[in-house]
Structures are given as structure tokens and as C-alpha cells.
Length: 541
Image (tube, rainbow, N blue to C red):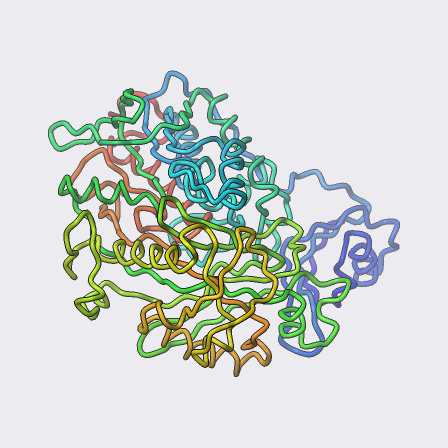
């Protein structure tokens, strides 16, 4: 017999399969020995009240063994004879575009400016140890994209354009824990995700696709107003329609498109800081009890959002049991991000705390605040205006951090009171911190809204606004500052045939899952462009 139950359990009842089997026996009246298996279909923690519950939906197998797999797997065909499609970038948008192309019978050729996910890790380590940033291999550039070494969280609010469930199942097929299929906030972890990414690459190659590392796109090959390939820094060109999935930090790509008069537009972003608390404090606050999470609960998370002077202020990419990491992708930059290992076991919790910035806000800057880009003052209506603002803020952070990867930081309550912090608490940020008055050199239209937001968050969550918390500058890479314009139906660029702007870097996604969904949609757009049938490999182009 197979039954499904929706239950509200105490944490100790939901801690593992054995305890869930006892619960299943109690709820069904069957002996425990007859409960052969229990599958968790959905799981979430409800900590809104003093008594904390875990909501679970279970599938229970009584006197039966599960025959069906936990998820359907995809068989990827050999496409070595298929039509080529160039995929620029091996982040989630590019990798899932390549997998979908293979499903459709097309042959992906991935070019990635960075290194493979394992070699990339060595360059990332040098940022902390020696303050050296490799501009082609860092937290933003390389196989796996920005998410590979900055957390690997998989939840998304984007469900309009594709199947979140399918993306999670594909991750499981390539080695992720099946727990991500059930958890309300699925998370692979930076210690587990690299192997999953390697498995995806191996499948792409096994199916006849190509993957070229340390190969940067320098130009599009355009003939008769159609993109037919790319030129690269290696001197080699690759031919086929182009899925452009370069990520939100590929500023050279934005500049190239702008110079070539290929339509792009400024897109709203959010900037601010990384806010780091002791995880034990967040556990106490979120679980409403002095002992914190105790033995059976996970490291607590939070999510805050409010409005301040007409702009959103909110937490972003919250990392329980995590670390703050240096995410610069070039010289004269200090940028921070957050990550968590799969066990979320560190002593700290961090999240981005950011303020919404819209393109029209650039016009409000004073003359002294106007930014420079390529030696020319950026006009307020330039599509690169907010990118220039990001760059200037990152350079200011570098200057105030000692002109290396040491990050400027300030205690949270000191920031509210506009006071210098003369000592700093211990932090997870390994390159080191330098006490700095963030309230002084970060623009007031950002800091003023942060102060207002922090006061609100402190009221709704007692203990959150504290000098135990540390603000680390700056968080600027929340999303792309530029949108590469494309047709809503075909996913093709509005003026160039054969070009499919994709994922977070093109301005159409905001995280691993939504970028992966967009990659799949762009792969399908390639089919639509050629009026071919899905699954055919001839007559498409």
C-alpha cells in the first residue's frame, strides 16, 4: 500500500528516515516493521510561533518497495552530427542551454573565458591569500558561473517561463542530493556543486558537444544583420547561432555591444553591503528561544524587505552558516558576496543588505558624483550609467579598504549612529577587514535608506540591529546593470538574427534556477528561429 500524508511535526520527529517511519506507523496504524520506505515530497520549517513545527508531505510505502525512481531522468542523445550552436559562458544559463540543445538534437559549442571549475578554485584561493585577482578566473568568471563558489542556492520566485521542478531534477541526475526536490529553500552547497558541474560538462562532451576553457568572446561575427559566430582571444572563430550567457559581471561584453550600437538599455540594480551576524544570534532571534536551533533544527534563515524613501531595501542571498567572500573580477575593485557549504556549519550568518537603484536615480547625482567611463563623463541617459556607478562604488571600496582585497567594515549600530567603529568583531571574511566609516563615503542616497531599513528590521525582529553585527563593503553584483534587448516570444535579439541574449547577464534572470530556465528557453528559441521541429537536426538553419 502507498499512502501520502500531509503532517505537522515536531523537529525531533522529522529529523531522519527512522523517526519518519515511526511517525508513518503511528499515523497509518501499521506496524513500524511494515513501513519499508518513506519519501519526503515537501519539507519546510514553520517558526512563526513559540512551538516550532516542520511541515512535511510524505509518501509512505507499507509492505511495498518503491519501484519508481524519485525523479525522471533524461537520456541525452549523441549530437555529434547535429547543427552547431555557440554558447558563450558556462554558468547555469549556458550549461542548461547546452543540455537542452542536446535534447533538441543540436550540438552545443561552449566557450568559457575562465578555467574549469577545479582549476578555478586555485585562483579563488589566491584572492584571499595573496590579494591577487585573476580577471579571467575568479568568483564571477569560470565554469559554473558566479553561483559555483558563492553558495549554490536554488530557490527562485520565477515560475512563469519554465519548470523549476525540471531544473532541480536535472541537478539531481548529475549528483545533487534529492533533498533539493523537497526542501522549501533547496541548497546544494559550494562544497558539492563543483562535482555536479563537472558531471554536466562530461555529459555535454559525451553527447558530442564541445567545451573550450580560457576562451573569451571578443567579437560577434555578423553577416547581413545576422550573427553567425564569434571571434575569440585564442584567434579561433566558432560558427553557429549564438546564445550569449556571459553573466552579470562581463562588463567588457556590455561595452562591446554599446560600441557596436547593438541595442541595450540600463536596468535597475541594488547595492549595499554584506551584513554578518553570529549564527547563534540569528538562531535565537528566528526560533524565538534562548537555546537557538538546538539539536534538530537547521541554521536559521531570514528574509527582510521594506520601503525607504520610495525605494526597496531588502536582504539578498542570505547565507546561514556561511562565509563572506571576495568577489572582485578585476583590478581596483573590492566586492563581497556570500556562500554556504552544504552543512551550513560556520559560526556566522550573512546576507546582502541592499537598496534598489533605478536608472533615473543616476540623474540625481551631483556634478562631483558623476562618474567616468573610458575617459568620458557618462550621461544620465546612457545605458551604461548604472554599470559605471557600480564600478565607481567598487573602486571607492578598494581605496577605503587599503587598495587590496581587505574590505572596509563597520559595526551595524555604529553605522546607524554615524560613528566610527574602533574595533571590529571576528569575521568569516578571510582577506581581512579594515575599520572604515561606510556612512561617510558610500553615497547618502544608499546609506540613508539602509539606516531607515535597519531601524525597521530591528523593530520587527528584536535583537537584529546590534553592534555584534558587521557591515562589510560593498555588495554591488546583485544583478546585471544592463539589459540586452530581445524579442519576448523568440528570445532572439530585437535587431540581430541568430543572437539569443540569455540569463542573468542579459538581464532576464536572477539566480541559478531562473538562469537555468532562461537557458532552456533560449535553446528552444534557436529551434523557433529556424522553424524546425523539436528533436530534428536537419533543415533547422
